Length: 390
Image (cartoon, rainbow, N blue to C red; front, side):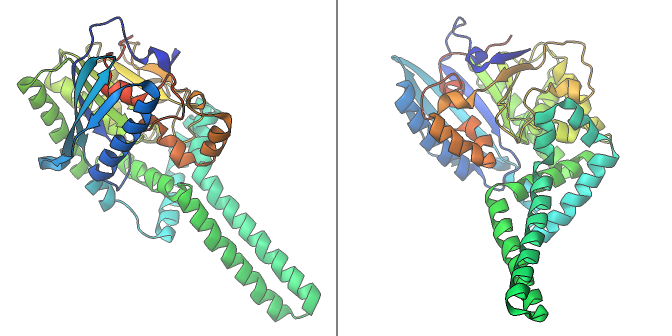
């Protein structure tokens, strides 16, 4: 059952004064410095809307790719201290980030072939229009560019031939028009996140083929770090937050925690934002990840909230990550699906512009709105109310 983002918080429970957040980014080569700066700047904007007071401390590097900063927030005289830890894996992303567009296109076609032949694409189509178009978007964009470029080349050739009567000149003009259209279209596609999304699909397909050793080791270290911190310094609430592809890592890290501590850890919550879990879970060979999904889905002791916006074309909004993945868990309460209504955070004009940039809209989960609304990432991570369990 989907619920509104207003039910993300539980004001009836004891107020949170100390919180620890572990954040896992998506398939993004930008590291902790970028996310620290974004959190600081966007918290300042959101504070102007919510009336809260935010102080975001400097970023401190730690071992294992971890960066940490302190957030102090005041809410109507109540102070909340949040220790925000960025669990980095951007070095692994960069190691798998194809630098050339032709490499991305070739690998993207290969990944599409694997998704189709393994039945994953058909499963995505059955999940609904939103998830299907999300998966299809980069391939349709590239195909459309090819068609439009060809039409532009043919039209230029016909126009020159009609005016000059010279077919060699017409052919040269057509090729120039085609190349100009391709170059301009590729630049536009890059800005629109098409190649970023293709790189993401390629990585998810690679991960689905077999576990990536360096990533598995990093997730082991992340789980160990969370367990050690919880043993040394308990707090009122601990959030493991994954965004985009980071939702896959967050699930696997949570599964590791549950295997280490089957009874669960007090006050720990899993929050997934804008998730694209089926990109991995629908690959038949991704058995290890589906086992992780089953472990987390069956754990009453670790509440899981999945937040998605229907307007976000780069996530699987409206799809239950366990159901679509074919994972049957004994406990059917996980995850709790929450809808983030981004259109309520902006004026109509501003939202119309925002929707044109699919990648920017996908990052709205981590950013301030234009007006105060139901969804507030900074209240989630630094507010006085705990995450609602059910």
